[in-house]
Amino acid sequence: MKIFKNNPKEFQQIENIPDGIVAYLINDPDEKLPLASIYAKMEKGTVISSPLVSSFEIIIVKTGQLEVTSSEGVKILEAGSIAYFPSTGKDDDKVIYKALKDSETISFEAEI
Image (cartoon, rainbow, N blue to C red; front, side, top):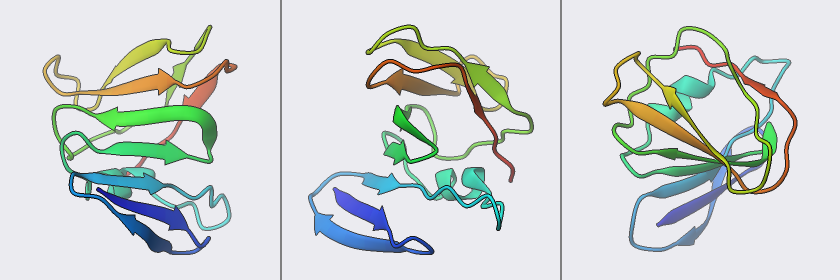
């Protein structure tokens, strides 16, 4: 598994392990980084931790291709809570948002 850490403008590989990709996404409000374009590069099973929501682990379970066209708010009540967000509106194509610790209501924005 390749593990990356933001630098903060670019990803810097810090470790290699044999399965998928784990990356820390950067919070870049000034340049409005299109998060979905980064997700689209990831493969099925990819785990993404984002400083945008430090308490979240995002796992792409069906596909690495997201087609998110609007924002989605997910309220997590306790650690371990899971919310399903359909990336294309199809039931068989979902992204799982899993809370690693308590969190407030968070809005996720993505654009292709």
